[in-house]
Length: 321
Image 1 (cartoon, one colour):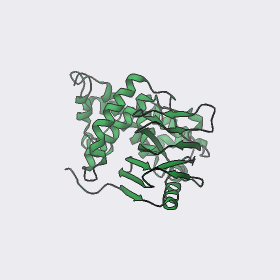
Image 2 (tube, helix red, strand yellow):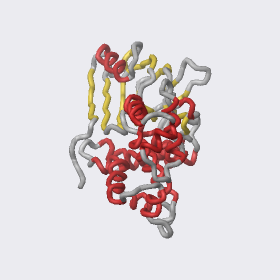
Image 3 (spheres, helix red, strand yellow):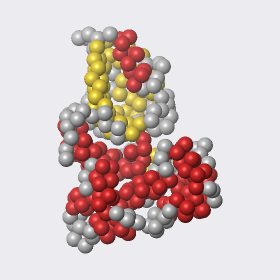
Image 4 (cartoon, helix red, strand yellow):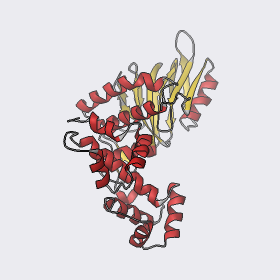
């Protein structure tokens, strides 16, 4: 049943003081050197609005003055587009990005970058890192990992992305949008971003910087054998480590158990297969059972909670459905 409870994130801040704006944007961008210059002719004002859940937030930022500074790498991936010319990203690099009105770009990921902007509005969609990485992993058939994005989006896929964002923006910006509806739109926008910017996981060796090699071995083994019936004992034996030690490593580095990781792998593999399947010749049960799902009713509930729609809806929405 739909829920109309407030989203997890709902920020609407505005003001007319430069110092207040500087302090606010330094918190937003984890920065210590945001600067705001001469105000526009009508006087200085600023507003920052953000609405969403723990997977995706959508917002707008407008500052009636030139601003510049450094944005530190955060935990989110950020898609942005400007309402008018005059915003430059990565200005300290040899090839800065000139944002064009209405053309989405990805913020540089995993590193700090400098920016310079004239008085104008910027629209942003922030993706939780783990959420977008899981969506990309389903498309690539790999483990979730930090993503690399094409600097220039594919033109056809970019038009598709703009259409998806345009269709979803109203509901995503509305605080009372039902959680299940919001989750479905989150996934649709994320999939369009992954396709438009050819988002791919970095090489596997960089997935778990600082994590134990046995945990990486366990993850790779579960991905390779996800179609088979697997127990925690099977995983620990494949990784060459005791069950308790393996569970402790997963808890410490991912906050979840090894079997939770396996369930997530299977969920995303099922979604990827349903997305490409022909509904006239394929059933949800066939795909789910093929990926080692043992309880279809429980699986359907978990799938809907994760992706905001039942698996049958994913299958019907695709070609042949």
